[in-house]
Length: 406
Image (cartoon, rainbow, N blue to C red; front, side, top):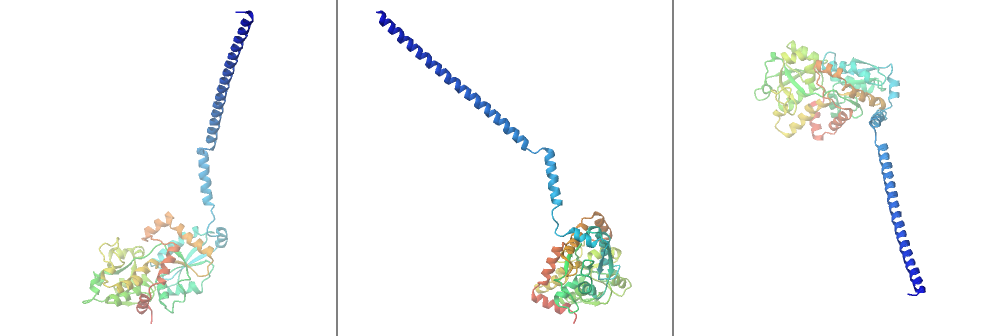
């Protein structure tokens, strides 16, 4: 091999070797860059994960934050605007006296319940007025209804607790009912009534069948006036069922009727269960025989006494008995305000009655006196009376024949 060729080959080999080394170096550098990128990406991922976890922890509510949130929600609920201006209502009632007109004489079930309501109600009316009872008997509470509608102050200082059967009299068109039932403002009721027909043990009557045809015995009952349940219901029993019932009217209230029963002047009376248990508990437990309940079904409290519908055998008679004798028990004890009392005060009075019915002391006292709490809200009471106002014309015409004073 010549020296020139040897040098040429040596240079060629060196060039090849150099090229190979360069390629290897570049490959190594490339591999090193990939590793660095992976490391950088890994570090970035870890940092992002840590930041995300820190953010999640920061955003997750702590127990303290949860409690604060709940408290804030409760405060928001408490501070939610009322449906009346409580401050303005309180300003009006502060230092005032609210008079509860009771359309019967003292001593009966209405009066007893009214005085219990008056004792506790003032603390729930904004401004905490004093609440007193004023008895205004006459014409089965008609005097009281007319007074509250036409003569009493219309500022919310007078409310009424009177016999709701006068509402039916007005619906039927009694000209002596100088009010419009649709315009009264209804505040609610602490109870509804299920009427009973009790007689004294001295009457000798033990069953309702005894006063029905064909071999009926006479039943002499006491009442206040047309428009009151103690007068209207006996008239329905006589005219619709043929019961041998005579009613002596003119008594100031049920308490006076009961006194006449005890003296032997009368045999019986129509009375609500709540009054029977609260005002006349001794007679109810020890002397009276309950002949029938003015209810659609048997009462749980009186499982041995038949309901009136057991003695009704046609649809027309059933409608008369329901609308004239059974349904009025739902609105027999309404708490009402006059038609022009400002809305804020009406709403405040209705709310006060709702709060009263949550008062444990009031409920305990009601139980002790025998009052069964079976309440209606202001809206429920208003709806029931609206339904009575809209009764079928045929039934209305028949009730007018039976119940209106000629």
